[in-house]
Image (cartoon, rainbow, N blue to C red):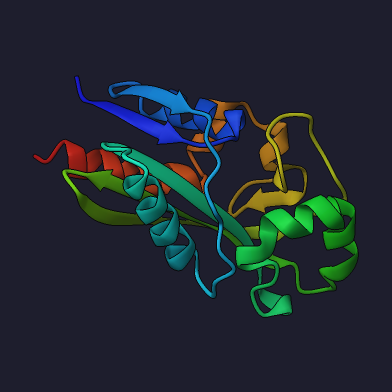
Length: 180
């Protein structure tokens, strides 16, 4: 069984990854790293990987995600965490307007054998009209994945993982680690 460290200060992200990557022995490392202000999730993740590698970490991955609202030209995108802390789901509900199409994007960065690999996942959907559900975190109470009526916050982890951007990126990391 492969062992990997998931460096994250977010216990909810770890639970989702551990539930999804049950065949990989995951260890959560509760460690913050600099999330640079950048134009893409890829840039944010690459910077975090390099910073942690420079501190001596090996065989680990990190993940960054964002909510990209089409009518807002991708906002809040890479600034999703900041926007969530400042205006939250209620603020996004007010900003979303009539065109509520959105997508969650995730980039998982793997640092293995001194090499950087990035894996992306996208979940198309829309912003709900109101907050619904008690599960999840962040924007989960206002995001409805495509072909679904429930928000992520109304789903159990296993059901959310069947749609989520993070799970789609983790599928790629799993395939990379277990070729064939």
